Every structure is written in structure tokens, then in C-alpha cells.
Length: 95
Image (cartoon, rainbow, N blue to C red):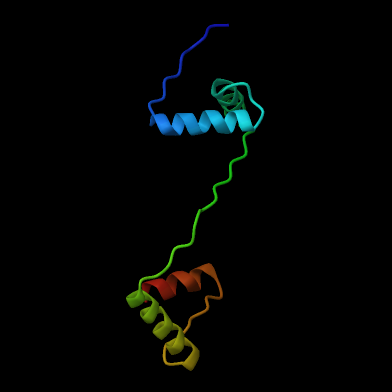
């Protein structure tokens, strides 16, 4: 089997954090976990999930704008459209 070397430039702190995480997961090294991941990726058996960290808050100005929009919708001042089909949805977008 021929070998290839994969070089990935990344910040030193990221590498150190990744090495620690690999050890915490029970791997002997960062290289080992990357080999396992790349093997799964190549065989299309890897499962990825991405989670968003933290909460994003609206600015005071946008919070007020959003609250006004909601009041207008709830009061009937602003119409809320419900599409009955994809074609209906496209027609509403183009209107």
C-alpha cells in the first residue's frame, strides 16, 4: 500500500485542542482519529452534526421592529399568507 502525507495548515491552539479532544475520546493521537475519520469519509459512512453555540440576541432596534411586525400580524393589520401548494407559494413570492 502506497502512503500519502496530508498536510493541513491550522492554528497551533486548534491543533493542541484537537489533540486533547482526541485523547479524551480514547484515541492514541490526533493522527489516529483523523485516519479513522478519513476512512469513514472515503467510504461515505461518516455521520456529521453541527451544533450552534450560544444564543444570538437581536439589537434593541431590531427587537422593537420584530415586536411591531408580530403585533401587526396578530392584529390583522399585516396579512399572513399560507401557501396551499408549491405553485401557490411561488406565485406569492412573485406577487
